[in-house]
Length: 579
Image (cartoon, rainbow, N blue to C red; front, side, top):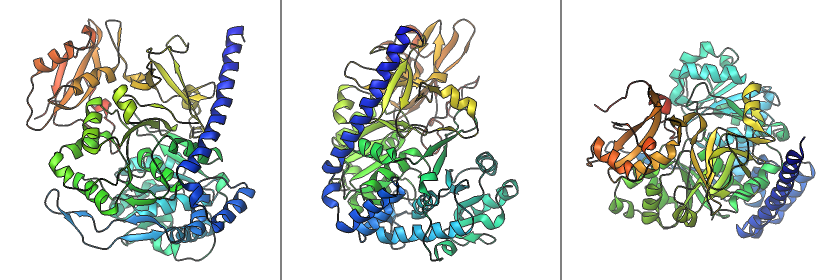
């Protein structure tokens, strides 16, 4: 190794040690500032002492702790009283809520773990969860972790072909699915060769021909704790091809890292968190798990609808929630008068991520809800990496914020050298939440790693204030006439146009320039703008090669269920105009 390389390695080592120390200090402060320390009771302390002495320092410990420390506190609410009516925006109350205390939730987890263990589900076994937002999702995830199994979560909108791929690639031997999609499972069953019919478990209504979840939790017994061997395999969204399975274990650093992230937020013990994004995705699951670290009450909304979202905040006095930017846009479309008709004063934090947050949208949200907006950056492979609070969102528009305690970020330029402030480079992350790699894909794992850091292919820059900004995906970089065009920069300018609701930029082949910029634009309801209007707006803020050569007006951008724009559906040879 050359002298320069050795010095760089020593510097990285010092940064890592410093990050670990900082993480531990921030975690300690978080225990105090969140009210966790004050909430400790003797029964809970005994559980902590017993489990930590056994080396059990992973999330499944939390449920045993809270079952003893705060047994009567409500852990999970299934708000069945909230349901969308026949008319858009109507709210009706067809049934009473399902409510689980921490004691009852842990009891269900123990029973489920016992039943799974009796069926041979444990270390080395993989289970596929295909569930809608419901309490059984949380129960299943924790029970499977407790017996040491690997959990694969999948969208309940998956097709039979997609389920076949996930089951086969992950080696799943048991399937827990929502009864609402029983017909899809029946169609997929012949392709799920590794999962016998008796190992397909329906949740919710009875599904003829399948076993039922209630039969499992009816069995009494304590689950063996093999949680140190557990793993979760979260498959990427697959916006560019077949999804890859990111494998994450549950080492002791996970809880410390979680407390570090919590320390950068207003989250507190006693919170009420509203889960509204799909639980199989990082945005929802990540903040549900962070909230459960604090012993918060989780209100699980079955589906997102702007009026239901606001109604739930008012009815349950919600303090925190996590959404994708598209959801914020839909809430604002209701208009300020309809929003203010609901009491949202209990909110302390609205977390958003999973897709770029346009600065104009952030400004409007804070104008309506106050300084309660927090933009975060993370990925399936990295967990939550950065958080931006209201101050940074105003001072550094479009920022994803600063690294949370325990996370290290590194920007690497095309020349392989570290980037200076203002320079765009590939973003690499190192943290206790980092995945161990991609399941059965050593090549993809190796290509994503650099000196212990992991990259998902995002390009970013750091500004003079120390805040990070995502500039797009490495594979989405457009090179037009030799000039690098970062889609995020162009999209930000497009979002500043008063008539534009949402926009996406892609590169398309061009004989003269190599690539040219094509923009897809959806206008706000009732707004009008021509292609020339949009281009003139862009010319005022962008250099020539960055100005879109084509503006394609569409009704809406194609998105996957987690809110990401499906750019592969836009980058075809011919534009797809609205009818």
